[in-house]
Length: 473
Ligand code: GLU
Image (tube, rainbow, N blue to C red; front, side, top):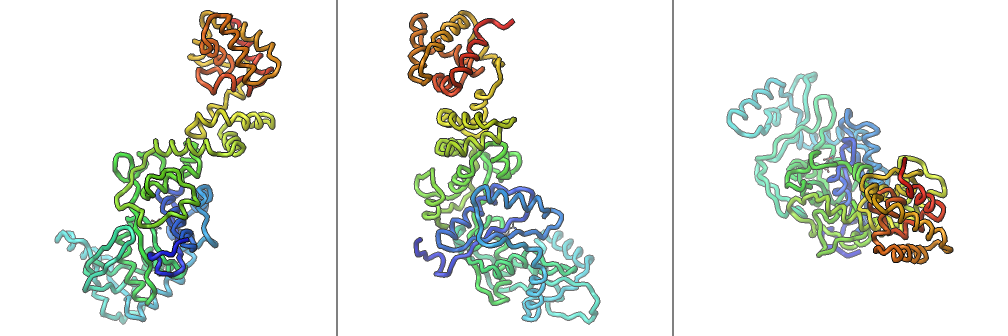
């Protein structure tokens, strides 16, 4: 843990504050990761707040999808998750306190008056910035409906020293009297975020740079309440390979699709997301422990990073090769369209050593492993069938006889037997291996043929070869 100047010596508290959309967005996952790494780097806490005020979208499955995605990626949060909707009464209480302090006011503008202001702004080609006449006025009609607005500062400027964006200044005349409480008494996002961050003790707000403008509208609320202001770090969004903002047409947006449809390991996605927008020299493979030790906001770039599927697959291949065989066998078993018996499960695990160097994702790994469980006689694909044309079936018969005579069924003995047949037949080893592969795997590609023989075992190997020795009727 390094003593860092960017925390000002306070114990660090960060948070991830997703609004449930039905999945954990890949950009959200990166935001959560940065928050976690920053907090842990400083020995602080990483909290989770579910911003569930949109009642139509915030269904239980939508919330579960976020929690599930975070658990899968190892983005474990400290303490219980906070639900924003449940805190509405607290938000309203703060709005009332702001009215008492003269930092907010009841605004009685009608829909018609608002529409007229909007039309006027449009005609003048100016953004609508509401300064309500009710800023300085009381209404004697106690029953008139109202919203509560921030009495935004009108003069001077606000400067944020953002830890990623640098110094950003906005003229206060640009900040409008935004609504804090709607006419039905429910809080707006702008109010709820600030109250929750304050009550949760958040010291560092690390989030997407689409929220930078909001920071200027949220700071007046901190100031009105006399609350300590957080440090801000607004990180650039993720763009697609074409440079446009990441959208559905660039591929998957939810982390679950990377897991379920693309067979990506969580540590690979986590490593990839870390490198996307943050760097530590040329290091590519970075473990979680290492990331916690190294992570800092200074290493976050200012420009949007581009999502590169090829890089993710390369990393994934690395993590598959490094993964424990038993774990991989369990993951592959989930991708197979049938249940494995105990002995099949063992076979799958034994096969990992030769299968995993060839796979960039779990789907490829499953596909590569599937020959182990094919039922006889194997259905050969076209390329494999072509390997059995000409003299190949006769050669298979000679290989069968030689292999049948092998005593110890290990790769060395198997290789010696096949080599002898190849020499006798006057062909290269590869020429003997190809029909063998077709018979044993039903495909043109597979792990090394002696590994295949060893994995399948004597009985199954000989039976599969025998199946192909004669031309099928
Ligand atoms: N709920 C907001 C979102 O999902 C994030 C709010 C924040 O981080 O301040 O975009």
